[in-house]
Length: 194
Image 1 (cartoon, rainbow, N blue to C red):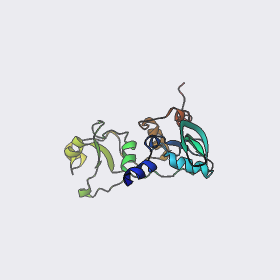
Image 2 (image 1 turned 30 degrees about the vertical axis):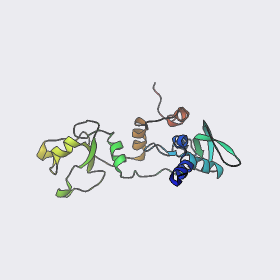
Image 3 (image 1 turned 45 degrees about the vertical axis):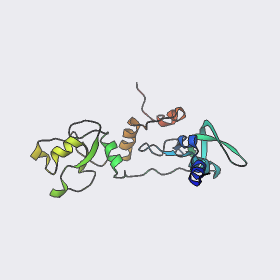
Image 4 (image 1 turned 135 degrees about the vertical axis):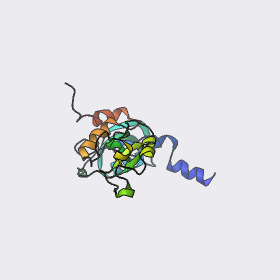
C-alpha cells in the first residue's frame, strides 16, 4: 500500500473529521461565540480520558481503540472554569464581526476588505478606532483620501468592542453547521421575547 494513503487513512478517517464538539465553560456557556468554541473529536476524546471535561451530549458515531469504544462527544463542559478574556483581539475576523460583515460606507455585504479611515499615508494607524470593514468598490473609491475629500460617510464610528458586544454579534452569525445537540447550550442565556 502507498505510505501516504495509509497515514492519511489512519490520521483522518473519512467520517471522523466531521464531528466537532461544542466546548462549554464550567458555567455552561460557550468559551467563545466568535469563533464558536469547537474542538475536533480527537481533542475531545483526549480531554475526556484526561478527566478535564464532562460529556453532556454525544453523536451516534463511535471510535474504537484496542481496548475501548467511545461514542464521540458533541457537547462537553470543562470541569475547571476558564476566566473570559478582558479584551477582544484585533483580527480581521473580529473586525468584520464588529462591523456585522457589512461595509461601513455603503452597507453592502459580500466581498469585504478593510479600510483605514484616516489613511496610513496621512498618519492613520492600524487600530480598532481607525479601521473599518469596507467593500472593494468603496475601498477603491476612498483610496488614500479622507472621508471629506471623497464625500463619504461612515455608518457608525469605529471603536474597540467589548467582549460582551462581540458575544452578542457572534450569536447573530453562527457557523454554517449547528448540530441539534448544541442549540440548548448556545442560546440558554439569550434574552427571551416578551
